[in-house]
Image (cartoon, rainbow, N blue to C red; front, side):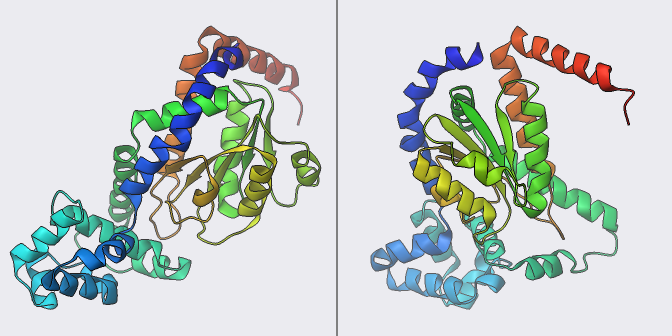
Length: 308
């Protein structure tokens, strides 16, 4: 039922997903170094001093306030504020947040681990520190995901002939979670993982009308990227749930859902929030059919409950 109702909607949304929404995401998420490089010829001599300092000392610059940045770059504090406005930020703090994201995106896994393990104030317990980082991740993820991103994702999901969920290494956990729970609501949701003997036999038959939903938290190309690339060549649509637009799979996706994952290891709380939200919205869109589908699943579980 949901597939039929959404077919027209999915087609109508296709242009928006490929065009307006993608352009808006790129404008919002474009890294500050790219922005400065593109606009460098338009910068005044003072603004170039700021841009040069940030480019050469990014890992240090993320900790400076506007006054400290001005002193390091050899300009006035007001020049730093105007520079942020010139790049399209509402203020210096907004620009500083993008500088922090840029610095984090360029770090290796080992560097991220060491950064997270650096000591803080002795008044903050270790458990509280982890909690604070988790809350920052979830808040930034929620604030960065407008409702229309979820609606575009649902249009792709509901309009798909088949859905495949892809992940490797730590991304296997959220991929498996989404695939199991989504199968309670809609049919034909498969899991594609490295090492599964049927992955390559199955993907060869996929193409136009099919959707791949991928999870990735690695900047480098791997099994997930290669499988998505093949699916894209075959005509599959792609939704990526990943740690930003610098992730290798973001550039080949029709829709990117960015999540914050900063932690000594990886924080999956924002990712699970996105999964929970997608499933909730999917259930609401399907209505009474979702309840009937879950009842069938419950009956099957009851039948096999006594088996080891």
